[in-house]
Image 1 (tube, rainbow, N blue to C red):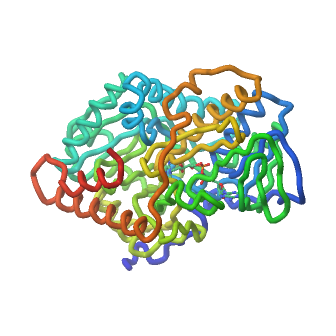
Image 2: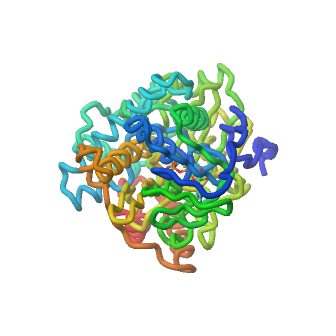
Image 3: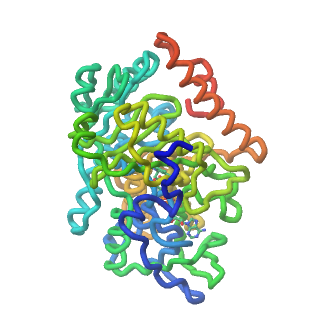
Length: 468
Ligand SMILES: Cc1cc2nc3c(=O)[nH]c(=O)nc-3n(C[C@H](O)[C@H](O)[C@H](O)COP(=O)(O)OP(=O)(O)OC[C@H]3O[C@@H](n4cnc5c(N)ncnc54)[C@H](O)[C@@H]3O)c2cc1C
């Protein structure tokens, strides 16, 4: 392993916790209990849902059950892109028409501002900087995809998106070999852990009960079962995303996919001078095995990408530990983007899981006969989407309990979407590993050719994955 990564902290949940401190756990459930709504999972989805429901109906008794502590999952480990992407939009356009997908996109654009609004209203610091999202192309094939992507986003109603050539891109961020980029204002950098901690505190202050260190082993209509007792409630909302496979009966619902990140030491002023990035946009690329990055509030680069994509049997987590090869691979991406940072130390590396449905479409649902609800399958775009899902779950619960009517949110095309389950093992493991090997090979091939055409291997992989 290269010297610049060999002493990196590996795991420990995430760099964000090393930076902001691990929280003291709240009291576990102490026996059978009842509530009006029980929410399983204390990430962004569960906490935002508790927040909006309690605000809408202050007398509701809401209980959140969290297996470890709020923010233990992806919500405490992500890249901090609070942005307007939502998994599955193009498929929803095919299923429900273009206009429905435009409404979904508009709702996502608004969601970025809604999160910022609430953080300001609640008065906590979440390290937010709204600098938009810059996505760069570094090969001719990536540039062709970038232009297609840019045109598609405009067609979904984004009037304020801009397309940059190589020179304009370099004026923002000096990425080696960048031949173009696209920028949208609908994105902000956040500190994921500050956001989830602030949110949990706001939810508790509203009067919601949060039990931590309380794993739910089974969800049944009107029941959330834990080793310490069962909570009964007319509504049970499953907000467990990448961990869903661990619940009884949910093994093949959403595939837990790994994503891994590194954080560098703080860069010096000269190093920032060489990189640019004054606008603090979140930064991504158009590779098939794409990367995502942010300039952190304390002057580091946090950068992520695909780790070992998936562990056999949908096993999910070991407190964020990451394979050494993945740390090296992410460092190589960093140095490929910014050769002047070749000597920069990687201080921390970690991984987390996100939930991938068989058709790669995020969903939010309340089944009115059983009172069971769920939201997730966000693939890699859940920081903002979880907020939209939560406001939608609030409206669905209110309609069902006779306290509300249909709203713009409940009519969005991702509401109530059904998808088939994943294949059993070993097909699942073979499929996902084959897929990512194909994406990596496609990126290598595209880097080595002047052709603007996307590699055939990647197109075939997309079709097999059910992404297009
Ligand atoms: C490394 C990484 C980088 C990412 N980067 C971005 C990004 O930059 N932008 C973006 O939009 N998205 C990103 N994502 C995705 C995003 O973080 C997630 O989609 C989002 O945080 C999901 O929130 P959630 O509350 O649904 O799930 P989680 O945050 O995973 O929360 C689920 C919670 O449920 C708890 N839980 C699970 N099972 C049980 C059970 N049986 N009983 C009780 N509790 C349970 C877990 O402990 C966890 O706290 C990233 C994800 C990862 C892993």
